[in-house]
Length: 241
Ligand code: CA
Image (cartoon, rainbow, N blue to C red; front, side, top):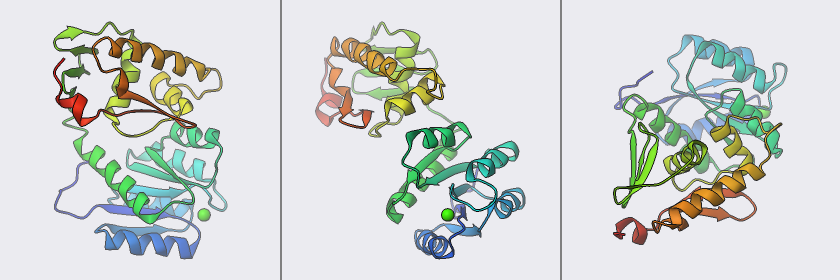
């Protein structure tokens, strides 16, 4: 669904805790969003069905109907952007949320500023979806999504299909860190029950090695204890190989 960019985005906040819900509402309104509220799953489903909602902020900790079930129900009737709030530190639960159709998640405790920033990023993504850019360019490094090939200075990088997908995914989310489990989910489409996270480590190693040959080996950074991210320094971006 595309929205008039001059209209404030409509956010549905689904949270059973009245105090928390109001806190989020007040903050989001101050940030320029229009806010609807729901205190439970059925209320959320009604709002999604009846109102023109751009983004759902869904707390997974709901009474009665479990948050993941609510998410699945929303997904059956709408492709609205969903940002999940989870207090569960277990990676598995987060991956489950993504599997059930969440577009992103924020782990509690979170700051309201972070929540609003994530919400804005999702809304931007939603808006740019129809006119998605099929080329990512970082200095001399070009990632051609349509042709599924990467090149540097016109020379093609010899990447295997999964290596390309991994690079394209990380580069498309420049600056954001993903754990190996999340990368299994996004790149391999796996719920990580049957895929070994070491697969990711090995693919990262190979992609880095191939990028290294054209001077871009540093682009895939290891974030110790968490995962990987694509980041290109201004220096590398403007350097010509
Ligand atoms: Ca709650």
